[in-house]
Picture: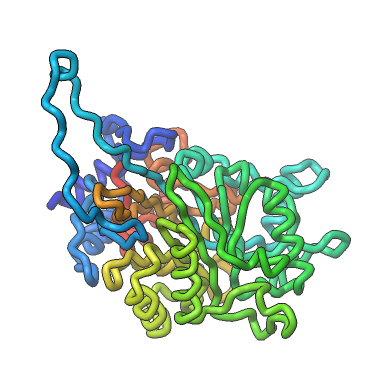
Length: 434
């Protein structure tokens, strides 16, 4: 196991600036300067690495992903393959052709929650003509765009046309956020949250309309009964189903005559929907859950109960969570990776009673690979820590990359080190090394 000093050098060196080649590793800088307060990061990361993770024995640094074989509807071969022909004079020097196995990379992020200061900043970015959220995503766009498929969580419904914009406690935000999400590299969003019904069914329609117009699909809201059926998307030749469910709607209820408008967490219904998606051809099923206790990194008994019930059925291959606005642990439950909470990706927090760690987020990267027997393997999640720089236009900063960038102001670097310390104390063993 590497010492924490070695881990710091690897992490800082490998993420000097995000690009499209995730396997590339930057040169180790000649000097990494730490202030007295920044050396606390070493202790935090050391504690995170030393702490055992339930149901898993991960290495300290992610170098070779651990694969977890998951179920597939593809049947195993019933008889051995025919023997290969003897090599000929023309084929002896050419390696025999093997099967082409499918592979895809996925990125996931936590809550996009547009408080009033973000909307005001977007208006300023647009120079008084609409709203422009895209500068906030400028530094993470190369990361999200490099994945084969990136999925956000849009917690703020979009305001119906002709209605006033609103934020907390009932959100109706500018449609331009959908354009910014598409420009940042997102392909899809989960949309089931406690704010789904903030603007009623008109808000659901406006949200789905805006995302669709921007070329971003979604799960968790529906304009029609057909739209509520889990769709299958092709990612690198892999048929993927993505589902989105929430614990509630802040006291609101789905219309009695339109219960399909969104999804409340019910383990039995989730298992049924996942099984149905598999029956229709899904190779992999990914589940987004809006759950947990706001402001707390601790996994609640409810989260554990739901995760256990769903993963025991072996029809969901990966669970990613949001809602609590802080980062929660990553564990394997019944052999399935569960990312319990990804924190805030874009928000004005901390506000009110929310702690400083509500400014921290993460990009969770996962690889999915087809195996020779037709099953699919979900790779060990890798975390790219992020932090929202509220003082500089709500810029989402990739923490480690900006720490390695000598052009970043030292005052910002101090805050980035503190953020990395907080994130490392929860998911340090999963921080990406390449």
